[in-house]
Amino acid sequence: MFTLFQRDDCQLCDQALAVLAQARVNGLDSVFIDDDAALEARYGIRVPVVRDAQGRELDWPFDVAAVRAWMG
Image (tube, rainbow, N blue to C red; front, side):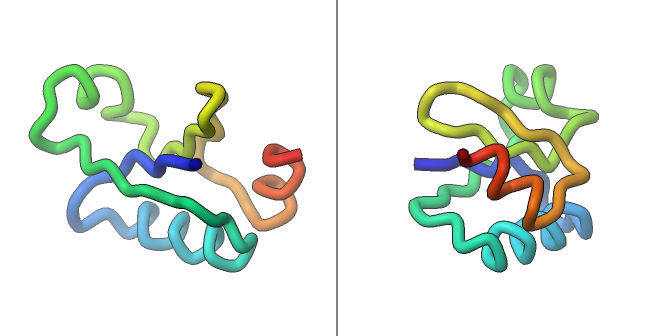
């Protein structure tokens, strides 16, 4: 299970989604941080960010190779 933290109308987030699709990341959920003060405080300047089920995070920018290496 993976979570992509993103914003509405975010070009970098759209690019991140494309990279994650190319890397064939399965079980991806998107969480929009715009209306959540706690998430905004944590991820506001960092989005897009991918988090795995163990809580590890990968900040943008990343490419297919970086995603695959991070996934192990």
